[in-house]
Amino acid sequence: MNDGGKITSGRSWRQWHAHFDIQVRQGRPAQDLLADMTLSGYSQAEAEAIAGDAMRAYRSTLARVLGCSTFLMMGGVLVTCATYSTARASGAGGAPYFVWFGAVVCGLIGVAYSIGRLARLR
Picture 1 (cartoon, rainbow, N blue to C red):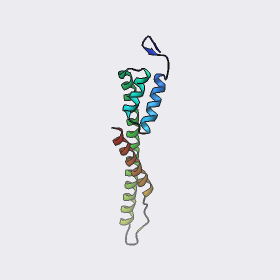
Picture 2 (cartoon, helix red, strand yellow; picture 1 turned 60 degrees about the vertical axis):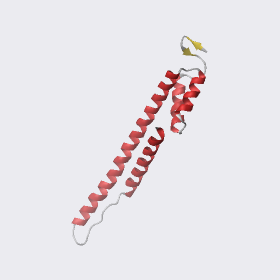
Picture 3 (tube, rainbow, N blue to C red; picture 1 turned 90 degrees about the vertical axis):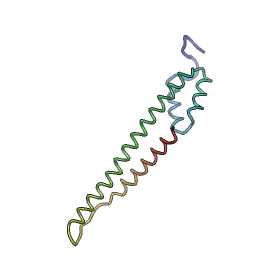
Picture 4 (cartoon, one colour; picture 1 turned 135 degrees about the vertical axis):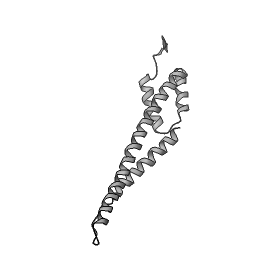
């Protein structure tokens, strides 16, 4: 039902935005979601605006995950290299050093996840 340019039945704009966000994160193509919205009575421009907002929000989240994962990975590599060089310089007996493979592995997983999701999102 259309009341002065606003749709009064079905999902509200916020509900569509939340639905779009969830579906995009699950990998459903945006074109399918746009078709659902236009069948519900939204104009193509309104549907594309909601889709654009959801896609921008998800890209922003993935960019944040990518940045944090890269920071974690590089931090692990940096600590490992720093403690190794200190242990190596300590003399013939050597000294213990830390290998932060957990941070490096978790960072690599996060980087691979976010890059993979960004590639599928296009």
